[in-house]
Amino acid sequence: MFKELKEQVFRANLDLVKYNLVIFALGNVSARDGDCIVIKPSGVEYDKMKVDDMVVLNLDGNKIEGKYNQSSDTPTHLELYKAFPNIKGITHTHSSHATSFAQAGCEIKALVLHMLIIFTTPFLLLVI
Image (cartoon, rainbow, N blue to C red; front, side, top):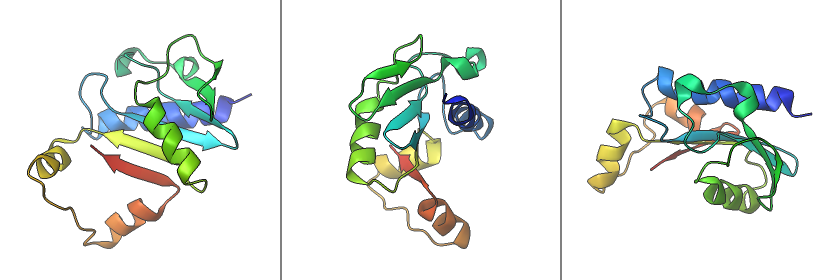
């Protein structure tokens, strides 16, 4: 039922590793379709993860599909989806540069068109 969305979320999660935005199993991507979201499972290493491992939940956090527990970041994702109904996806990373800026209390301004495009697409980028 959620095959295409699960595939998209799976691929987006693998991109986090490809672009060195995460280490170990930290960070995740979720995406929304109507009143349901698909999110990375908790604690599953990226190199062992499969499309069918993605977890499908309703906006109340009830599991619809998935053999694993959902990401521990799911409550934050759900609150954002509820507060901002136009959001179609969320990316949570632990990139070393963004983390350094955050720890130093420095603002990261969107200075180039590419950054503006990233921040205005349906995927909301959260850097924590």
